[in-house]
Image 1: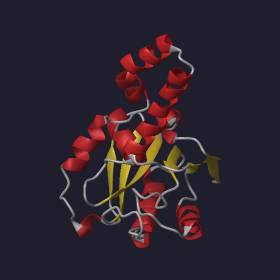
Image 2 (image 1 turned 180 degrees about the horizontal axis):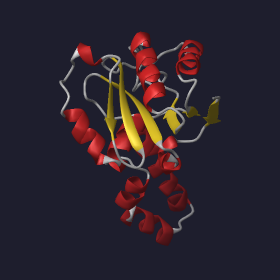
Image 3 (image 1 turned 60 degrees about the horizontal axis):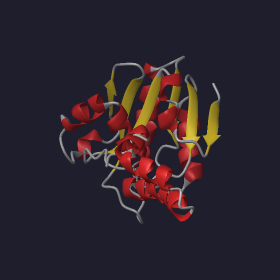
Image 4 (image 1 turned 90 degrees about the vertical axis):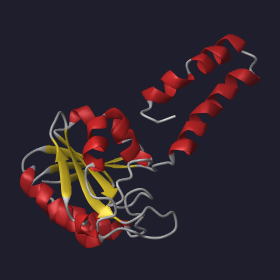
Length: 194
């Protein structure tokens, strides 16, 4: 089956369209930034399950933790401790996780972010290598990859709050104060932790 790529769209708003969501993550039980954090907000059961695994256990590399539900969510332990400047992706772990997912979810409609390439799931600078692993390891699933820039939670919240200032500058006080009053609801609707 072919791999489909959707550019510049956050997967969090489309998860219900798929049978399975693959989530690349690290062995340090951190689901605190990017897509991982949003998934933990939208589906709290994955954080509970993730926290039951041993912290920083290198034996988790290449293993998956699958949480049944709608959709099925499969955490893939593919990265070391998140780092902005260093590649912490374990390419063998990525390949093994995808191969086992290919077997388990054969014929299913599956989605993921561009695994291994965000600062929160490996920070690989070699997108071509990651894509080659993805394509070669998933011949039996209908995989859709959402390729977009994942942001740090605080940065993303700040970007949304900047929109409030447009109304302040226009002196549209009613709209500005309405947004301020509803700030927590707005942030929650984006699946961001405040």
